[in-house]
Length: 307
Image (tube, rainbow, N blue to C red; front, side):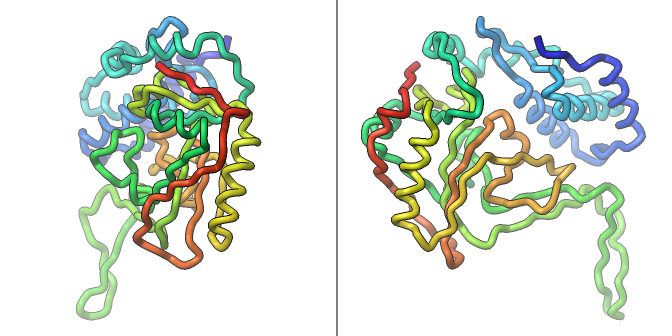
């Protein structure tokens, strides 16, 4: 059994936060959004389908962030649903029980597989013929997509440290500080649109609901799959810049520059443990259409799991 984070450690984090309330200027709405992002990442389900928040040592960074939000809310006398109430997610995750049955007792070697969640009809074609649709990064900046998918992949916003000052040049060509500005942020825009194909490096029962999926393709031999996929891409897009690796997740309040935009995502998506294949044009382009590829049967490296 994994070691739990102690009450003493949590209290130490609470006292440290009181000395530097970096969330003090956040609006109540923004504070509640951050709380939900953290709790969503901590959410897991037992073998019996019961929701719980993982508070083991491996979640140390997220638990510390939760304590900070909780303390900020205490300071403002705001009392929200907390880490003691995982049951509120039961109505959202209605497919977990079916997912547990569909998964059965499969065992996986960590780091040796990929999982693609989606619709049965699409994943059947992917398994049998290797039919794959790849969308441009701009496709995902669509508010009609569900929250697990929707994202502005072409820009990243980070928060500037509390106390950061900004100045403007006046009519005398002198720089004067702009007073009263709070919650300063900086947004970096990527120089070109690019293509992206996303998978998960883990299987979780909750991901069927998160991705509005009724099936997943378990790629149990990622080497065979990636060899086929990347070979086709190199043949058709030989002059494009191709890269494939695990996504890194950043907290806008604690950015670690420089951020490689195609392979860095906001920490709200951390629970997805994404593996990404990305390729971008040699010359910058704004408008890209989707691409349909056929890489050949995946019957020798994958298994289709249906709800």
